[in-house]
Length: 596
Image (cartoon, rainbow, N blue to C red; front, side):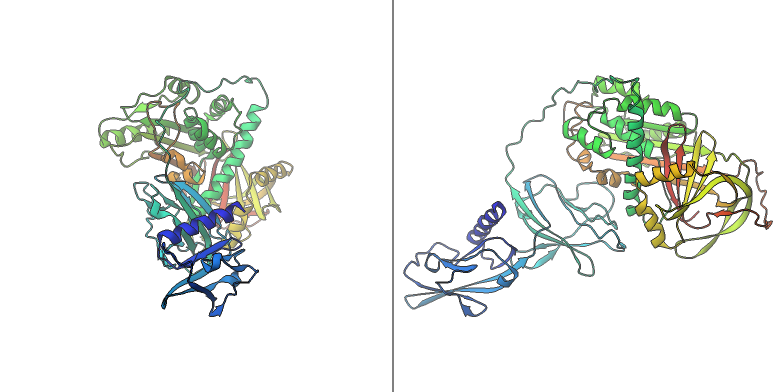
């Protein structure tokens, strides 16, 4: 009833201020149509109402009723039967006055959003999960005349001062951001597919912003809460479960952004990067980051166990995170000290020029990754306040030698490409068909107490790959590993394409999908910098992974055809891979190979 009353008041306000006569009304709401839309004494006039050409009786007692001797026509509740043209005829002193109202009834608004003037607002819209996204949705706003006006949206990936922006181009999520909302942005918005399918209808109410409160950081010098349970056995399993859940959430988002290309990322590295920033986050920003990385709000031992985890993995994984900041900022002492304590990273001031900063950052990345990654950034804008960077690399070796030969890899579109193939006619491994994932899974032991899991969809069809990806929850993956542990290894004839991936996903889009858009807009990072609002300018993540034929001399290529003597595992078509640390029981990399 509160929604109905509010809507009625808003519509009356529109009548008093506007000459528009075409209206959208919510199904089930209450509507009052005024016979005149300006101040006039017509108390002695003869007033009649018509609906679709037929008189509305003044004595009517149903949903449509005449009120105040015809001054208003009330409709309550509004249904689809009330759509159409309403006419009010006033006769007084041989003068006639006619007002027309064309009413369209919306089944409902998917979202009603109330926003203060000057604030950003997100307009949600999603394609069905099962659909293919080949073109962006179309966005419209209704005009005062009831017509639809197309929105001119910017859909490039740069996060700049564009007022209207499509956040995730060619993604199932077609959310639009309006920055610096003005009163004229109020109204009804529609999101539709290019085929005309309605995806969402949004009603925006813009209110005058309250008097702004001066920015003030409270308890800005307070350090992260001490870990009181360093010897507890619950902290490490809690972090492991959080990382598994976070990993599958990341993969779900990234596969939507990159539906068919090669994909590689390090969930443990991205989680560590956000955990590092969490040291300086307060209030809502802290809670948002904790939700994003899937850890409880009261998990005060997060940084302690993250440090222990990094130490466990240091033998095989080169991982580096760093925060670069504007030299005019004075970072909080507690934040700086704890960055060094937990992440071995002292936040670094940016230099004077873009060229100097680019060289400094790329040199740092190359050093931290043993030159596996030599370039992470192309340039750094002079206005940059805060940069959060991350780089990770892993070079694993098989525990059994492979021969190399040439073979044909079948791509998603059915094309065959000739690629180098790692081949072993009797590789001892665990292999099984996992019913819960509807895929064949092979586990390969690697150096550094790690395992590579390769998940093969039932065919090279896009639909089978998508079905596997949809079933890859953290629970399903852990169940798969338990089933693999209970299965005895066997000798298998193995064919794998040589794997060498170097991928840099769009982290700015990923950060927004994780519910952290506020980091780019109005984050509370008082623990990091307390003198003013600070926003994140850019986030980068680059992942490199190479698996080669251990012990094979360069150029030793063979085309020998081996007779099949064992069950076979052939990953010569698109597959998903999980690089898992058996020692730390956490995912290191997750990737998809569609074109080796």
